[in-house]
Length: 403
Image (cartoon, rainbow, N blue to C red):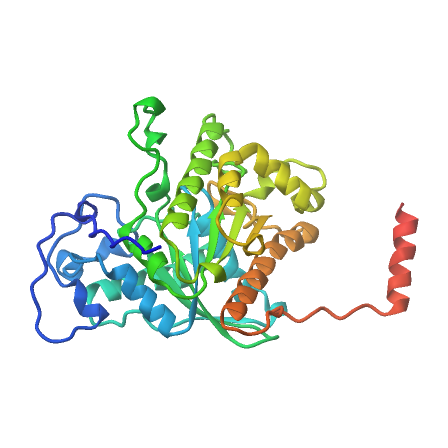
């Protein structure tokens, strides 16, 4: 299976582009995107709002961006983590909870550091991509911890956040998390048009993303965000269109999986795929026993997945890969409403259950990275000390007394 030639970057995202000037001599990845253009009227990300046209002048020729990113990340020993999902699926919340957990839980004894710019800093596009990474890792993570509402990702280009994860119980690993706009994956029929009138159901995968997936030679971890609800879990008003939006989210995942099966050849046997039911706390938002109800049993996860994501699940199970490369689980990034992350000051059991989700996901990603590097997959975190026999007996006695 030979990957298709990457398509040229869609200039409508950034305004009219001029053809790149010819250059003499050898050029590195930063010099391959030289052209002139301006920012379009599409809503920019916070990083882009202060950038003028001159600073974005080298975004014209992006047909090779994905393949260059693949080459650099591979040469530098990164394990890529690519998140897919429609808008409001929880992709950014997953990243925020992962980053915030390591930076705010000293009991884990782990560290996380932003690495050097992937493509250097000599070109506008290279600097832009790293500014987006810096903004997400530093600013958004702190805003998330402060309980502020994190705006949805709105960027003209997909970007990777290059990080070094430093666990207490194993070697350091480098991971690169991809952020992108959820609107890029929405089914074409989500505009309300009749299915029978559509020429196709799914949008083309972005050329930069497709060329990265087809060009990266080692293993990649793919995470498919399948939200239990597309609305805010603790919002004052209900989303009356939620069932339809969840249906679009299911179709979007199906479309991405079909593209993966078509374009991914090299490294396919080392890939890992995780279908993640996000906003898991939506199923028990008003339950009396919050800690118990937020916990996710495998049978319950599968039941919800079959009911709400039947088409995505069928496509996921039908991937032409070994079943050991697939996992299905639930995820809760925190109790979040339309204003941001809710503080849980007097509910330690619920805090403990919610914190367990990013910790388990970190363990999954870390083991994937180690296996991809040919190392033995081990847990990144130290096992908590086992209680003494006397303490265990005392706990059993308390359990018996309390019924």
